Image (tube, rainbow, N blue to C red; front, top):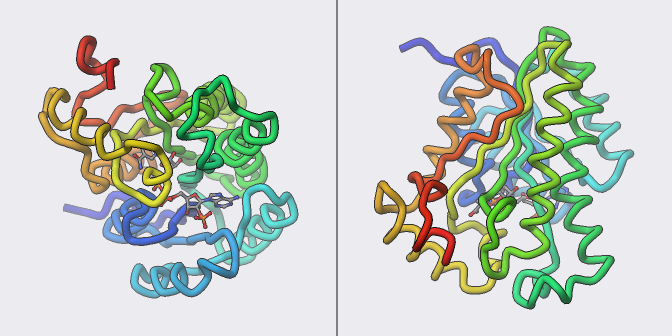
Length: 261
Ligand code: NAP
């Protein structure tokens, strides 16, 4: 079969380690022939992400803390110099204070609320605004979300509220960027054991509950999320925008049992 992303230039933000959903996506993009750009937040992750960059034959690995406007501007400049156009952007970034993911949502501090919103939701807006001008031939922007945006899932708390803002941002950005033929979508992944997920209290209970309840009776494999990201970034996804696509073994359709988790 021919490669679905041959000739496309793709930026993937959010690779931290081999367990990151962004790593699975970056690997699938390489498999499908994309020319890849990876980012890392700061010096601490530089070496690891550069190693992933050489493994995945990335065109460049660029530092970008999405809370810093100057970093986003530098990323944009480096991409403009390195690629004729950008065709696909994957935003796989989120952060909340650990204590806000283990106590009642009622206790969320103003600072904790604003931090989660800034890193996990507003960053999609600032990245899209900066990179859309490089997407001269149109393209695809994809972010990662979770069911906690619309259902109450114990301990997801402030991150659920940030994901609600993220999903609403997907719809508004899809409307703004549609005339430029830039599509904006979210993938709502089932729970996956990653560094971020480990910050959520009792996360392993969520994994067990989903495996017992989901229609497919198992958890989500990051490779399944990655293949959906390939579809959205490819020409096969050309009619899809403003959507939240669930890749969760079907868990989100469940009522009793589902919402209790
Ligand atoms: P992960 O490997 O920990 O990835 C999260 C990434 O966000 C890390 O690379 C992290 O980098 C980055 N990040 C945080 N603050 C940043 C900042 N200021 N600037 C730049 N990067 C920053 O965990 P993951 O589970 O793959 O998460 C990826 C996305 O999938 C997130 O949006 C998450 O909410 C979503 N998601 C995860 C699950 C799940 O169960 N795992 C389910 C549905 C959706 P640093 O560590 O260097 O800060």
